[in-house]
Length: 302
Image (cartoon, rainbow, N blue to C red; front, side, top):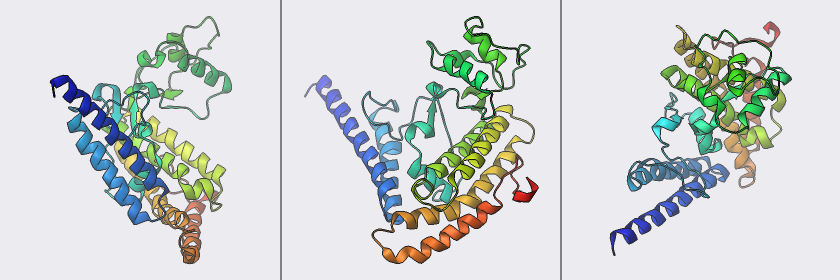
């Protein structure tokens, strides 16, 4: 077997391993047994974090047409979050089960990471046109910490250039470049934790929480976290760590509920466990409104 044939065989093997890792992650998300689901996820991590990088020579580039798994993306083109959550924590498990690879390894084409949820419709339309037009207008957009004299000026469709749109709507969006710092990584942890909770089976398919209200809380928390991380202020790290702690307060009972909910068909005796976990989630949500500083606020004080 010559060198070319060996390379082709290795590439074929890599594709098979990626498909296997993707299948393991899908099986973990659907498995009714939480312990078994974690074992399947751990097996997928071994493949994607240890085996595939060695096989690819640390390339970590997904092939076209293949499902993306937890490959290590090129450092220059992506931001990979190093989680502050302890391995096996409720938040980490929810992220692992419910967040697809492209949300965990954010590449430049993800820009902007998020737009201001309170942005006016007119401003949103201008940013969407710029985002989906030709080129990569957000690649050269000003950083959050830049001083932009034209910020806030009106955008005129067909007259204002894409570059100027980015400047005039500065602070209406957060880019990956804004988050390339330790504070930014913590902000992305908050962002991803919120996404995973919202996508969990208990929230999505169950009838345990008022999904629109929870969604609004998580949306506001995601935006506040990204703004804090992008601003890199004096107290950014302490604020973000506080927000992560508040996410963990909700993640623990939510994972318990989610695990029992997924296993309910195979184990009918889980009814009391589901009811108890649902009651705990509801009790947390009654006063779960994290402030920018990460403290809990009672609903009547909002």
